[in-house]
Length: 533
Image (cartoon, rainbow, N blue to C red; front, top):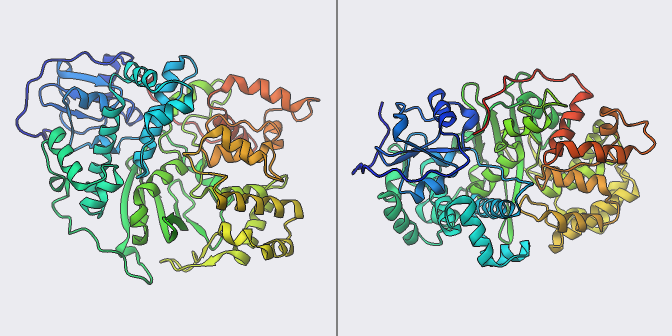
């Protein structure tokens, strides 16, 4: 079966491919349709003018016609258009990290910020703003970006917008105007012009043939599974599904979330609230791992349609779907042979994570879960979902910041110091002094957390790992970590852990999760994939 192509099919000269990719290895990954390479490179086929993911199911092109690119933006800058079968916009994102070249670090930081903003339906930061954060001029930052990625920041941003719009046009009931807004175009007219210029298509042509007209605003009242929004979220295998789910299951709060199935492919259901302008949206979601493909099926209530792009990005972060298992295993594998496929558990609400982390200070996971359960029942809000057992929402910052909430928490068994810490976090979030989203800057957020009463280094590092998605968190005060790595009886355990952790940078958060796993039965390691290009 031949790929879907757009006429005319130009025979283009072969441009100079970016450095850093081994063409032979990339072609072998294409031939094997190896999902472990998905999103790490894209293949431009000069005979068709199309670029594809390594997992594309079309007939393998001849090697002489293949050019390999690190990013979709590089492929599009050479005149290639995205394949309509494998859909490059569905590839797992890259996790940018480097510890060697300062220019490379800056270029990767800018790419991450631009990509994150577009994925979440937000306004991307300006190069002037990003340059000020990095302490360089915007002209120098643009030059470093161009040198590293071989495209300008504007070209990279435009590709991200086009691919994001392409995904929502194909997979969601968002109207064209909503897609334009969610993808950062600002208006439908600009999106139409961009699609015509880059893809020689109109946005309407990307709608599935069987698709109906965009869904109207959801009506108030109960929302059933029949009206749910359905999406697929892809990841790079291998994936230690049971290990990640066991982490969440051990901390699950009845009434707010539930897990079905004891096998390797469980179903996670939970309630959810989401800020939307001056108000908030209440809804629910269901996550189920696919048994045949490396993807997760997401079902969400139609009430979450206005915030769907941000929700999908948050779910991807929560489950660490954009991790590079092979790259992490290269750093950790010598000391943690079971680390291949390990994922970093996140969360869907940073404030919720902060409250539950405070409740869990210096006590067991089971005891923290008991306190969280009491807090949910006493101060949470009732809600309606398709499942009777999911019927409550976690307490809001407004509710926990109230004066009477301290007395209520005290009656639940929460000690005074933790009451003050929870209320301090709630007030800081309400005032805007504290941002616990994955987009927040690390150092200022750590400083803001540590300035609050009852928040120490352990809590700050834990929240940086789970809420801010910091891959290099290392809470050396953690007793379980000290026990797992055999330094609990050391006279200077924290210093010993700090020195030990240098070996595992920049993935110390994954080393932390792997060390915690040592306290239980270690999982069977998956088969290693091929070496990265």
